Length: 176
Image 1 (cartoon, helix red, strand yellow):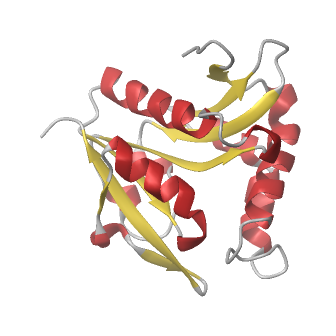
Image 2 (cartoon, rainbow, N blue to C red; image 1 turned 90 degrees about the vertical axis):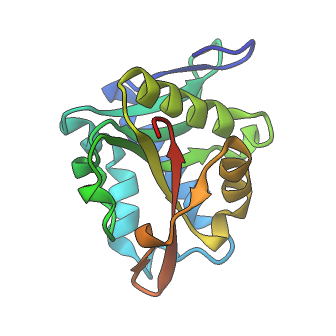
């Protein structure tokens, strides 16, 4: 997917470390989101974001400019068994999902998060998935609002606790 300023593509292995650093910066600055000392395993997962690509049908997508500078990323799961969250999401059949979306602070407000989200939805549609599943937290209210505008609906059956942090599930129905 390409806009006039940004292209969404699969990340190259040489970019994995940089993407991890971007995601750590993004998530550690979210007000109300656990810091690294509170959830070290979560931040270790962000640092090693490229490990997700070892699973089948799992892609690390990036938003880049014309100079190939990475400004945002997300992990797309065409098979929910590899989604790796708490709760029941990994048991959903014929469903896709995405996690760990983050946009570098210098590129916020330019529609990159929406581009990454729409690319995931497009992939799920192309692969005949019946729905797209995601999770968000209260600290991610901007993303939460964007997801709802796109058409995602709250799905309490997907909610779970990550330590002390409530995590809220959403679904976007593609095939009723």
